[in-house]
Amino acid sequence: MKTMLRTDRVNGTKGRGPLICLSVPFVLSALYLLMIKPGGRKRGDRRPLGTGFFAHRGLHDNENGIPENSLKAFEKAVSAGYGIELDVRLTKDGIPVVFHDEDLCRMCGIPYRVKDLTLSELKEFCLLQTGERIPTLREALDLINGRVRVLVELKMDFGDFKLCEETDRVLRRYRGSYYVQSFNPQALLWYRKNRPGILRGILSDGFIHLEEHRKNAFGLFFLEMLMANFIAKPDFISYNHEFRGNPSRVICAKLFRCPSAGWVIRDIEEFRRNLKAFDVYIFEGFEPKLPGRLPEDRVGRDPIDKHHPNLYDADKCNRLTINV
Image 1 (spheres, rainbow, N blue to C red):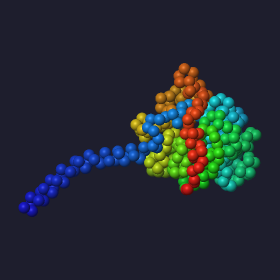
Image 2: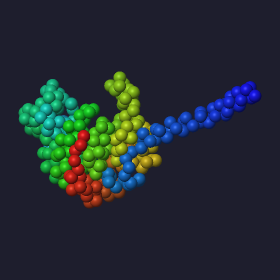
Image 3: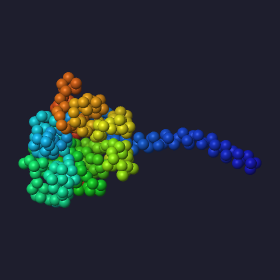
């Protein structure tokens, strides 16, 4: 009798073995899909993000006196009818300014970091030896004045929620159409908790394919594969167009029908190669006007949806409290 029981137990274990082996890939695949699943807005609704073009750091020309992220570059983009992508950092005294790099070396020739200088100190320096100064976010928005859409990239360090708080303090007074995006999923988590009516996007890149990022390969692979989406719950995804074939990006676009933006498109040929991959194109160095190749609202203009949730819910959003 004991021998028969032992045999039954062994046979039962052997019978379950193949089932367990088959279930493990299924469970891992389901877990992966749950991790990369974007936000919970209406499935397939691409209208909120819209279609069209965003001028990367404004319609700038660094070689010819129109510096990136300058008021001059923003005015030129507005005049041409393009949306504007811009970057935001905090000064030492907590003022959101429009500037991409961590330090002033490239744009001002000064080896200081933005966060180590006050606004008045930053205003002493010119951008690329022109008469243009580093603008505050408020100055940039006052100039744009709702005439085109604005895509605000939050240059946020991990755990530094002050950037979100101070940027939002400025943005909540702005009545134009805008979105926020960041490489840092914590920034999107803050907006998800505190400003759910604002469309938010996760930025990503082919990090592990780039030499400068390989020392942090594990953590950056996690971000490259959009596996922090379960935290950020993005409404759209901004991805380096050179890595548009990333499986997570494709799944988000095709399976979850998540709107996507491709950056940075630098010429007509790059634009043509990416024509079917993205809904929105962030560009620089040329003007992407292709009459006859796109619907009218995607030919070199920036359509603003009158029912954009950031406009429709503005009063409601302004009543939300900051609790991070």
